[in-house]
Image (cartoon, rainbow, N blue to C red; front, side, top):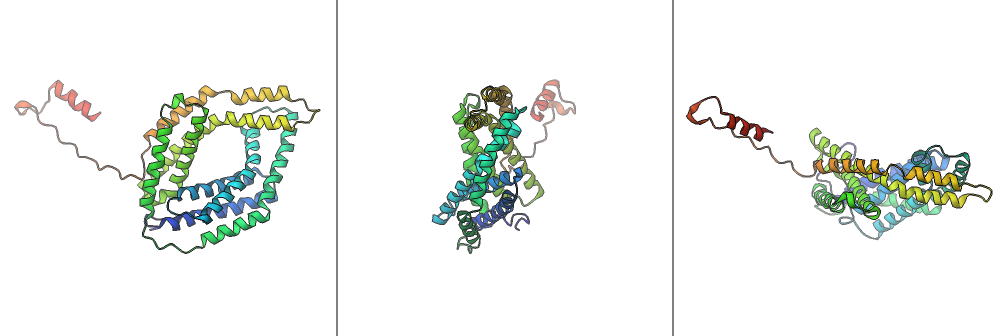
Length: 324
């Protein structure tokens, strides 16, 4: 039976599953694109970029099952559009989440820069290139199913195991990873989270199975968030450089930007600690795509020698250790 939310089931063919996922992303893209074109509400640019990232993630996830020039072209266009929307989203996040007590002069510069970034995003989302992309997505979604006997659960089990193993490899000796290796780990975790989110309907026929998938996805999301918090420092450097470049000769903001840089770079020990905690939680998360091992019934303890009902002190201690 297919999930009522996703239209996916264990026996869904991978190409059909991809089109279901792309259709949901396409709906979100159209919805939030309309907000970007009508206003400067932050949710518009944020969620438009999310929809585009999910599209790219879906195409990448199913690459081994569904590939070709059409899929590669759609993925490339989604990447271009996300790049056009990225500067507006990144600057807004920096100004509202990464730093506090921003001086008025810096706010004025940021508002000018943000306006330019929004106009860039709107131009990309309102042009002929987007219209062509939109039509190509609709045509891809409408394609008939391929003649294949492949099942989503078998495809998903292999892909999820590969991506989980890659995260484990990249996270070895976590405490010693430099910024570049942490960045690669974050990308691997992000791809795993998208894969788990997209593919969990193939393993969730019951409430218990859905709970296992939810717990794993939550652990992966926490890990991605902890890695993202560490990445904020690098992002802050880029944002501050852009603000310095956008300042007019009459706007002396060097001292203010230096203070914001110190603020954005603080708290590394706390972020590292949270990353360590998130990594431990991730390591304990049950892999929902694997069949749970059946419970092994525990054998009844043998009676003590002589048939006595009371066990001696050594026997009691031994049983206690087994139970613990």
